[in-house]
Length: 121
Figure 1 (cartoon, rainbow, N blue to C red):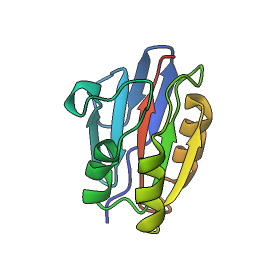
Figure 2: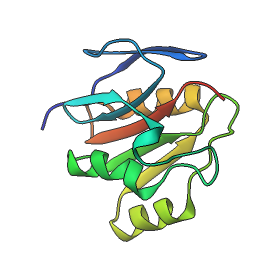
Figure 3: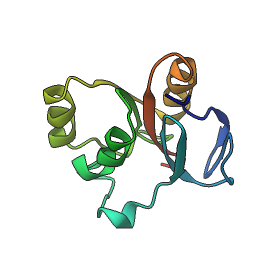
C-alpha cells in the first residue's frame, strides 16, 4: 500500500501537503488526498465530522484515522462517527489541528493512516 502524503506546513487557513496543491482543508489517505469540501456532506462545526466525511478515507484503505478539530477546537466530531469507527475497529485520534498534523505525520509511512484536517477555527 502507498504511503499517506505528509503535511509539509499548516497555518491559519492554509495547508501544504506533499503532492497536492495548497489549500485550506484536506482529506488524506494512503496514496493520496484532496481538498475537503464540507458542502459535499453538509458538515458544519456542530455536530461536526460526519460518518460520510470519513467514508472516503476508509474506502481508500485507511485503518487509522486522525481527525482535526480546528485551530481553536470549534469543529466537533459527531458521536455517530466515533461509533462507526469503533464498530469497524478503526483506531482514531482526535486533536487540535497542529497536534493532529504532528500525530498524522508521525504515523504516515508506518501505518495506513488517513485524516481530515481543518485549518481554521
